Length: 100
Ligand code: HEC
Image (cartoon, rainbow, N blue to C red; front, side):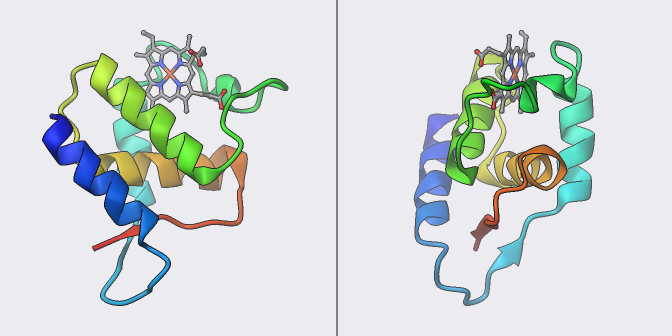
C-alpha cells in the first residue's frame, strides 16, 4: 500500500505547476468518507477547536494515516479526493490538491 501512497504524496508536493492536472473529485471523496470514516467520527472532529490539521497537506496526511490504519488500500487518488472534500466542506483552507 505504501508504494502507492508515497508517490502520490510527492505528486501533491509538486502540484504547484498546473499542467495536465486532474482536479479532485470531491463527490467521490464524500462517498468514500461516508462509507469508511464516518462510522467512527462524525464530521465534528474536523471543526473542533483544537483540531489537528492546520493546512491542506495535513488533512492529506491525516487521511493517509486513517486509510492505512483502516487497511483501505487507497491510492493517492482516493486520499486526494477525500482530503479535498474535507477541506472544501470543513477546513476551507485556500488550497487545492492536484495530481496528475
Ligand atoms: C477507528 C476510528 C476511526 C476511523 C475508522 C477513522 N477515524 Fe479519523 N479520527 C478518529 C479519532 C478518534 C480522531 C481524533 C484523534 C486523532 O486525531 O487521533 C480522528 C481524527 C481525524 C482527523 C483529524 C481531524 C483534525 O483536524 O483534528 C482526520 C482528518 C481524520 N480523522 C480523517 C479520517 C478519515 C479520512 C478516515 C477514513 C479513511 C478516518 N478518519 C477514519 C477516529 C477514526
